[in-house]
Structure formats: C-alpha cells, structure tokens
Amino acid sequence: MEIQSQCRPLSDVATDWLIIPFAKSGDVDTGVAELDDKLNGQFTRLREAGDLTGKSAELLAIHDTPTIEPKRLLFAGIGKPEDLNRSLLSKALNTAVRKVSEKSGVSAAIAIPANLPDSMSSETFAEVAATTLIVGAQGQDLYRAEAGRFPLKTAAVVTTSAQNEPAVKKGTERGVILGESINLTRELVNRPAGDIFPASFAERVESVASEIGCECEVFDENRLQQEKMGSLLAVAQGSDQPPRIAILRYSGGGPDAPTLALCGKGVTFDSGGLSLKPSEGMKTMKCDMAGAATVLGAVSAIVRLKLPVNIIGLMGLVENMVSGRSYKLGDVLTARNGVTIEVLNTDAEGRLVLADVLSYAVDQGAKHLVDLATLTGACVVALGEDITGAFTNDQAWCDKLLAAANEAGEEVWQMPMSKHFAELLKSDVADIKNVGPRWGGAITAAKFLERFVADTPWVHLDIAGPSFASSNASHREGGATGCMVRTLVELAERYGQA
Image (cartoon, rainbow, N blue to C red):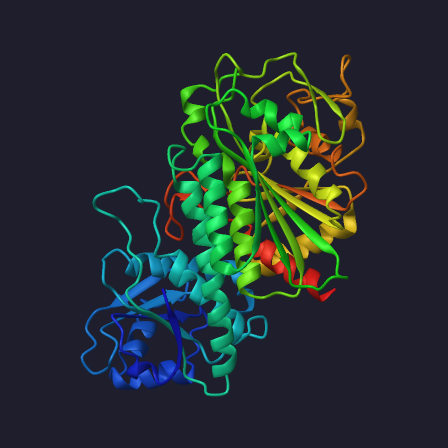
C-alpha cells in the first residue's frame, strides 16, 4: 500500500479518518488550532470538559465534521510530551489504526504535531506513523471468510509545516518499508505448517530475494550433507518434509567492509519429536520459525533501504516430527564444527539447528553474529511475554544491540552468561549435551549455542515470548508480532556507519 506524505492544513485533508495525536499537556499546535477554528471551538470544548485528556492510547472519535474535508476525526492520546518515545507512540498510533481498520475500503491519515518535544523529530514521528498505518491494519485472520481487519484503501502522513515536509517525506518512506517488512514476518509466522514448511519457506525467500534484488542460495539435503550439518539434519530426519537452509547475501558496504550475520531458527513445526509435546504446548508451534521469519523481514528492509552494510542472513529450516526415522534420546550427533552432542531431549531441537547455522556463518567470515530463536519457555518464565532476552560472549557488541533496540522502541533485557552454566552441559559420552537441568534453562541454551560461534562477537536473542501474542490487545493483533525487525534494521544501519 502506498502511503503519501502531505503538507497542508488539516482541515483540507480528504480522508475518511484523520488521526490526530494529542499530548497530555493539552498544548494546541498551529495545525490543530486551525482545525479547531473550522469546527467552531469543538476541540477546545472537549478539552475543557475533560473528555480529551491525552492519556496514552486513549481514543476519542468525532463523527460530525461538515465544515472540513476529513469525514471523521480520531484523537489519539500520546501521554506526556517529555515521556514520548517510539514505543509509546507506536502503541498509541497502532491503537488508533486498529480502530479505523475494522471496515473495508477506508482511507486514513495521521497528522504530525507541529510542536514535538526535543526527544522526537518529525522524521521519526512520520516513520512510526507510516509503520503503524501498515502494521495496525493487518490482522492474523488470513483464512477467515469474514475478516476482522482490513488494509487501508489509501493512507497519508500529514504535516502542516513546510519546513518539516522533507523530513516527514523521508520518515514516511522509511516507515513504509519497515511496516511491510514487519508484516512479511508476521504473515509467515501466522501461516500454518501446511503452508509454511522448509521447502515452501525457502521458495518464499527466493521470491523475496528476486523482488528486492538480493543474492540468494538454498541448500538442499545433499548440500547439507556435504556441509556436514549433522546436527540440523538429525532434527529433520523424522519428517517427510526435507530440510533447507536459505541464505541471503547483500553487499551494501563494499568489498572491504565487515560482514554482519543474522541467523534465524526456522522450525516450521515443532511436535517435540520423541519428547512429544502435549496438545496444549503444540497448538502454536507453527510460530517456531519466527527467528527465521524475522531474519527475512529484516534483510528485506535492509536491502530496500539500501543501507551501507554487508549482511548475510541465514535461515535454518526443518520440521521436528515423529516417525520411525526420528532422532532419539541418547543419540550422539556431530555438528559442522566437529563438536559431538548427546541428545537428552528431542524437544530442545532449535539449538541443534542453530549450531550448524552459526558454525557456517563463522566459516563464511562474519565479523559479528546475531541469532534469533523462539528457543526456550524458560526465557518467557523469566521475562514474560513482551521482553526479548539477550545473551552474549562480547559485552561491547551486546551494548550496541541494546542501544539499537532502545532506539527502535523494542524491549530487550540482557541475561547473565556465567561460566558455570557451561559446566551444566558437560556429557559423559560426548563433548556436550543438548540440555542441562531445569533451572536456568534459557541460559544453558545460550551457553550451548556459544560453543558454535568460536571467538566471533555474538548475541543470541530469545524471542519465545514477544514473537507471538497469545491474544488481541488494544494496540496489537494477536498472533505474530514481527518483533525485532526494527531492532535488526537499526543495528545494521549503525553497523554500516561504524
């Protein structure tokens, strides 16, 4: 969907819904003052009556607007100006867009306040606005005869300031790309395993690569055997769906620039293998490929934004199923880097997939690594459903990722990586076992992955909680969220500028 940036009085914006962000301070900027005058002071009266408070994500609709071009107004509270950041703004605007996208064929526009606080530029505001116009209007109801949410017919981001017009245009263009990339990730995660399996996911990667002009390579079973990816192949052997690794390469930083590798766990369905999950634990396991989908969404945005960075995106794609061919408890696997692994739980499969993917990324000469995976329920227990856990072998590299996440408005919390956790993975029959004790499970999983990154600076992001929402909320759809796409894009942009 094309989103225009416009510079005009708010009363002249021809749209079904004009969304007006409103701060808790109640300050009237020049654009809203002009609108209030055309409405004979209706805005001022609502504010004085206490109906328009500016409380974060609070909405107030005005349906009768005969004297102006917008057919309806929707005031969206954005809280105190001094507290405004990307996260709070995104929540408020997503709430508003979800409200106006409940019917098909609707147009909408978001106004950029003229008196933004110092912490929020008009470019950033426009970027968030454009992203929410795309993300907020897409639901997870891909297969329903009667959809509950509809993409907007047309959309715009509007400023009343000619001085801010170039910045608003630039922010809008970036926001569109981010929104479409987040929705790409969300769509893949929301589709069931009957649609998204290793081969079909790899085909989608090839299609996206062709659209954006990016180099793509797919490893089939024979190539995986040649690459000695015994850990990944073991997980896949119980399924009738053959495994794949999909690889995207983008050289925007030039031949001498370092390469950043983004690695994603892509278990397109996880039954648990012989360590079978109960039905309740299996219901949402279509989302166990969210790490790979996030890599695809992020690389898509990075390429479309033409960021000056060298990127390799690697997606390890398998199904973890049950059959007479399934890998078994007690099996000893040999990963690509020669590390032997004793299998004590076939439901701890994501780390086995990433072991070979990370090892391959190191061998490709990546100077820095980030992996993303719906890896452990233990991380959800520790941090809840809205916060990503970060684990690292290099504090300076992790600090850069945390700074990027903060700028992108996504919550990430660093977890400890004390050496004694590695001791819990020692095996009597192999170099390492694939699970430790119950306690500290998110950390022992990260310590397992650390064995496959050599000395390369690396951050592991456990997105098991925030990648898939269990229910709808006022500001977001249930199902896939597309979390961490914005963080990875921000990190890549900073990496290219370093």
